Amino acid sequence: MSRVVVVTSGKGGVGKTTTSASFSTGLALKGYKVAVIDFDVGLRNLDLIMGCERRVVYDFVNVVQGEASLQQALIKDKRVPNLYILAASQTRDKDALTLEGVEKVIEDLKEAGFDYIVCDSPAGIEKGAQLALYFADEALIVTNPEVSSVRDSDRILGILQAKSKRAENGDAPIVEHLVLTRYNPARVETGEMLSVEDVIDLLSVKLLGAIPESEDVLNASNAGSPVVLDENSAAAQAYNDVVDRFLGEEIEHRFLTVEKKGLFKKLFGK
Amino acid sequence: MALLDYLIGQRKKKSANVAKDRLQILLAHERSERNTPDYLPKMREEILAVISKYVDIDQDKLQISVDEADGFEVLELNLVLPENH
Ligand SMILES: Nc1ncnc2c1ncn2[C@@H]1O[C@H](COP(=O)(O)OP(=O)(O)OP(=O)(O)O)[C@@H](O)[C@H]1O
Ligand SMILES: [Mg+2]
Image 1 (cartoon, chains in turn red, green):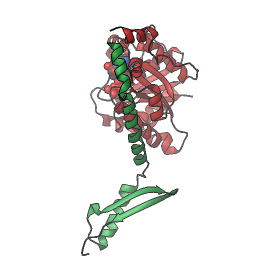
Image 2 (cartoon, each protein chain N blue to C red):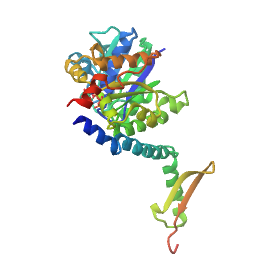
Image 3 (cartoon, chains in turn cyan, yellow):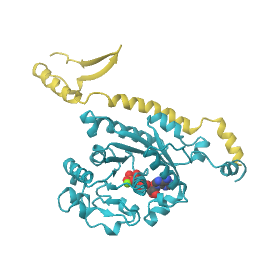
Image 4 (cartoon, rainbow over the protein chains, first blue to last red):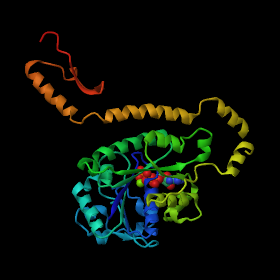
């Protein structure tokens, strides 16, 4: 049985593409066959983060419009077996995607034996974002601990619950998971940043994981290698936990507090 | 210095608490709006069309809302008629 997972947020720039790249890579590392689709038509970025930008010949829009086959457009990841990327178009606009076209691609991917189809949503709550979430079975709500991001996440939750295929058909609702990114425990401890508990409270969504604010994320995107592959990085470990929890493992949450050394420095050092 | 900042920070209300309070109010409000049925705008138009057949009214003099009172859902229609119709 394949599952469609949308990575969405409403607000832009909160870490959807970073999360899509690491989450799909993590799932593939577990042995699942994974396709990750960039829905951000006109602003293709997932290919850069995954490091396959020079291998894009055909894209998602080409497939939807029948100009290329799915097999031609799927880019096989060079590092991780069973991982495939479907790039967004860089030249077309958002109207190039149709509901029927997207449905066909997703159905074909299911038929081709993909276990997980990860949809990297564009920002906003308009057509592009709605198409990305329409066929979802599960959703990763990517949120920063910050007022506008929380508010926009709540908007997108409303859309998941009302305008998805599952909602329209009256099927079991989309399973919602909170992924809190760019978390800074030091600022939470000084009372300047909303805590995980605050955000869970406000959105009433179960926490899948908190990803700490980390310099490794920028380094990873510079290199075109999803941060989850940078084994020594806290962000990578946090994304690995996200994947494990998503697959049903019960793991204690990490990276929610400042390390002891950090606290000492905060109180007595400059 | 850091210690001093920390102690001063204790006294005034933490900005994260302010953020949470504001969001709680805002999200409650936005969620209640989200739950109004989406046929309302269309129904409003149609009701207006019917009324306009008999009375010459101003478009924005008709207010429609769905409220909850004592466990019942109440459809509220509010129309101000012009002076000499
Ligand atoms: N945990 C993190 N720590 C530090 N920086 C991060 C983290 N997660 C994301 N970023 C940075 O935030 C920026 C936006 O990330 P990303 O492109 O993944 O967001 P997005 O939600 O996909 O944006 P858009 O809405 O434009 O598609 C990038 O510069 C990325 O490197
Ligand atoms: Mg993105």
